[in-house]
Image (cartoon, rainbow, N blue to C red; front, side):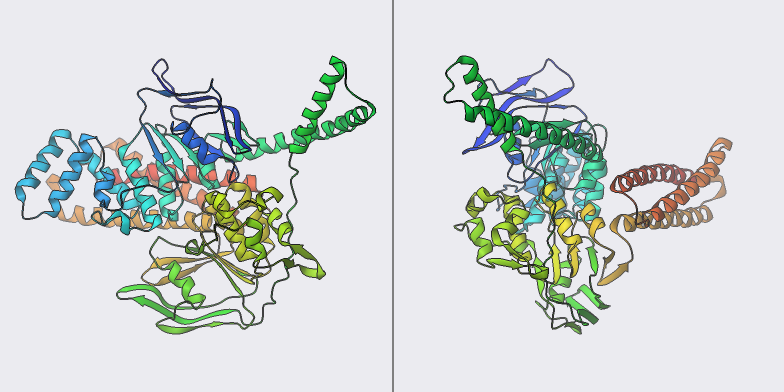
Length: 633
């Protein structure tokens, strides 16, 4: 079914008449999809809708159930696929895995890296250097080192089987980017990346020559990278030519139109039902045709799912005066400092986001807070009324042989709400998109995202008053995230979130614990986007100061006759750039301050975020040129 064609230049992939069922469930029916060169395309759908199955169809690993279906890939197009869970040989080293390719340049770089380690064999290094020279591979090698550095991949000789799931996913992503295929197909590329890694990947994929098809729940990523959104809903595929903000706007319009049509169909169905009941039997051709049309209309009306307003007023354990207190707490592992002399007292209904690079001590901090491990110095005091609810990646252990409803019923048959109200386990599951049919399904039949959603519910159903969510958004669909955000916005207890999902963090947290390394934890008053903007300004100021110092030292040390002189035009440009950079930085500060306005709408926040990103790019370009001229100043 996979065809290779060379009679077009711009279209990389086309799917036509694709139909796929999973048992009795229709995943998608007669869908068509086009991906052109340079497009950044995202697929949005709820968990269990068939997103991953569609990726397998695109790769030619699964077929369609319609005989006239077509999967057309341009014959000269190279494709790189990132699955949710990479499948590497656990006995292979990281370097062998990354450079496992037919590309001669990659082979030369691999030989060079291996020769560097074998110091007692200089002849190998000499031959490797000659090969690098022949293939002009030095620039490519520098790019590879940049990618490996960005994803914090340092031990190239470690076995893949010794890596964590997150490290293995980063190796898989680095491998694909290093191979530089024409067309990237990425399943949740931001999972297991820290915020700095996501920022870098965002910029990399945004380049005009990249062609990408991705599944991701990261809404800032969708907004800033993608220019086409496909939504898979009810077995149909809807196309939106714009970013995530445009998609939200047009989807709302579509939903309103569908609601109007649905209302008309319900009225028509009532009239037709009266007619059907009056007919003893449809004997004539016209009458039979009308009965068939009635059944089609009935199926159409009953298949539409009404949007539920989310409201759960849980009866949580009352928070006492003492919640959680850190008193001069330290935790070290040998020379590594995870926490160093940290003091803090949590207040009622506090919302804290935790950010920092991978491996800096965030998970250790949480384990100290929940008293899973003891600190080396200081003490943690937990109030008598505190009931922790801790969602973490390692905690996903569900009985495969149980039905979804029984998993929740084993914890609580009934969930108490405020004012004497109650919620059954089944009603609670429905709130989080496990309908009556899905509740009877066995855990073993759930998709990865559905399992994570169910595990999250096992944490929430225990009615904690201090929630700790460690990467709760991984593999959850956007609809689930919206429901979870609505729930957490009304949550009456304390909330601590560790997440790489910037949108999720910005919507729910009031301030941040920023892990800066060496045990230092900075309490930042504001959300992540505000911190990110401030940090970029600080880094730019520091870089500018370093260049000024470097230029001063170089000028003092260099003989006057060797000093290249700046032309009159370059001097004018140099002075002009300084003024332009100052103006841009002032504009950026003003725009950043605007985020403090509590009345900002989601659209306004998105518009301001895009404007900030544009200003960042302009500042970076102008500072790069300023640094070039500064060397001559």
